[in-house]
Length: 300
Image 1 (cartoon, rainbow, N blue to C red):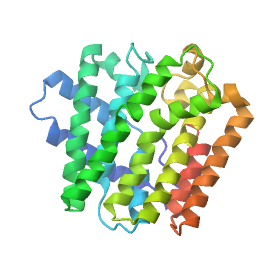
Image 2: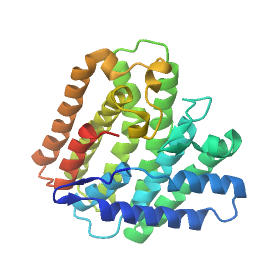
Image 3: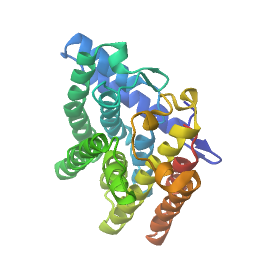
Image 4: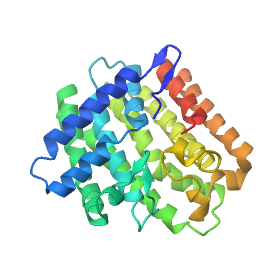
């Protein structure tokens, strides 16, 4: 996976810090877990990835005035994301064999081990987020709000609810508003939470938090539109997962509704909106600006 890097805006060091933090999460919280399940969790966490949600959290933290090391919080968000991929790939869900360029967890282990690993990663993420927030901020109220934000985005009112709607929509022609509802939950909720958590950890005021949340909502939806485009324009090798699965699973997609050009235009408009919201609120962050553009222009 290519590191996110553009001109003077580089995230190589942040990705390395998040990788170390994820290793520490595994070392700290897997002790005492059933060995096969623990191995499956570690496999899921250590898979190569863009770490986009983690990078967004760190960028939002700095944009809000944070000066500490937020990699521990960023790692907690990545635990949730990794869990979602493990379960998304299961035979009863999207039934995929490849993720991040290697066998999916249920292929490398078993369906039972992958299912148990995903379930174990949810409380692990909550513990990791609480511990990291207390280390970084030291305020139990802020730590509680961070954990609530992460778990809310991960649950039935966020990612899991969106996944259910996505499964129910297979073989059904969703209209644009229905499709956007699915993806604002399934994909957008955790991306939005990542940005909000960065602001919360830095003690951002309400105006800044509101701008970050609008930014997060826009880039979260733009990310999913770009994913839909890539599913039909990129190869399996480029994506690190099986290309063309949306068509096989008869999912409604943005290119199917808007056309390829229209989908790309919609994603670009959301990226523009995200950057404009920050600028209008006086939140100046070359990193967040770049990430909004990268989400649309990426090739994997």
